[in-house]
Length: 184
Image (cartoon, rainbow, N blue to C red):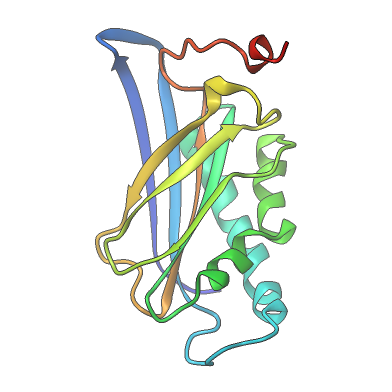
């Protein structure tokens, strides 16, 4: 699998709500820009050959990079597929909504839940939010968060951005009651 560009972003939040965040909240995003495997083929009925050719390699490329960039244990994670204007949203979905892709991240993080996702089509520079949830229990509210991503020159019309994001903790200064407190 060839890619045009790979971007790693690490965000650290040291203050939230006028108070110090201790420990500093850390979040990592790794995004890769690839050629759409179905570009120029018109409507493709069977996406399986493209999935088989690309999805696992994408997961193997991105997952360890997110973990390395995070620099420690992961507690929340998510994924994204942003398709260029000549592609279908289904092309991005095909690559990220398969265990061939997601299991690489689950294994690297010691996770057990499904990865929350965003898929959309857009021009170069489109912004998108990657949703994150707790890596072993999606009902843990403190870890429901999102991170905004934008690559100024991607995706080109026949490209797809595939991204993974991971956080070392929940939202900074979170203080919502557990979901179980409302389930009486």
